[in-house]
Amino acid sequence: MTDNDRPAAFSHGLVSSFRWRVEPGGKGLSLSKAVCDYLKVAEKESADLIEFGSVYVKGRKECNPSMVLQGGEEICVSFAPYGVRRFYEIDPARVIFRDRFLLIYDKEAGIPSQQTPYDGYNNVFAALLRYLAGEKKPGRYAALHNRLDMETSGLLVFALEKRANEPLGRAFQQRRVKKEYLAWVEGVPEKDSWTHVSEIGKAGGKYVSVKKGEGRKAETLFNVMRRERDRALLLAVPLTGRTHQIRIHLAEAGHPVLGDRAYGAMPDRRLYLHAWRLTLEHPVSGKLLTLEAPQPADWLTEDGGRRTEDG
Image (tube, rainbow, N blue to C red):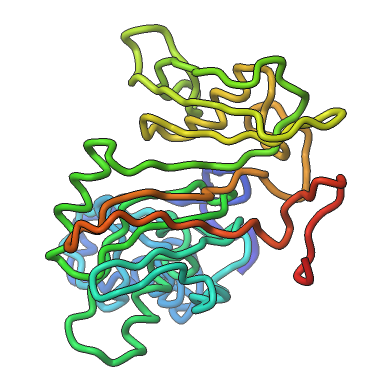
């Protein structure tokens, strides 16, 4: 199939998506055949897209190519720039903490925390479920309790039993989980520490600070840990959990995170934001836990270079 054979698409950056409604006469068709017919692709390619998590029916991901349609359903298909390549699995060495109830994982930069509209396979949550299934233990379960931007590295928290899920959720909702991030930023702040408060909402398809009453309150504490000639290393402590909160607040302060092109920084090899440390009560035992994710292999060093696997 060539691009000229395919119906018109709308684009999200490098991702192209196709959306249509099944005609009433499509009742009884399999999802795979409907996708095949509309996109003019081979049925195997259609099935691969569905199993990969790239197809949504009535707004919900559907991974069963044999699903029988009733007619009238809205279907959306998104194509990842790398096709349906399955390349990501959990690295056991990145598990920072694990017991029966809780698992803390050090997410790599560039990997989504959970599924995206175009890929249900290559993300930490799906990979963790596969990893747990491979252990062949009964009662496999995982629930993700915090999300990091794809470009951000660091700590993700999972409940491994339903018994732990509710108290862990309450702890995050009630802001009893202390989250600390490291960020290299452009420029050198004058203040040693400050608090940034704004309301964050979505405008033009992007999260930004908005006028009072038009968004949700966001508050972040910042402390300068190191100053260099044209950059600084900061500790960021978000007191609320809004999307892109730290990135927005640093950009507003005139010191965007290095590599954060979405908020005005120059391009770099990565976004230099790292979810470094978490302090929380264990959801079952009540024991206070403080957990840290080591600085990533590609993190900036104090002498201006970048770390390597050898340190």
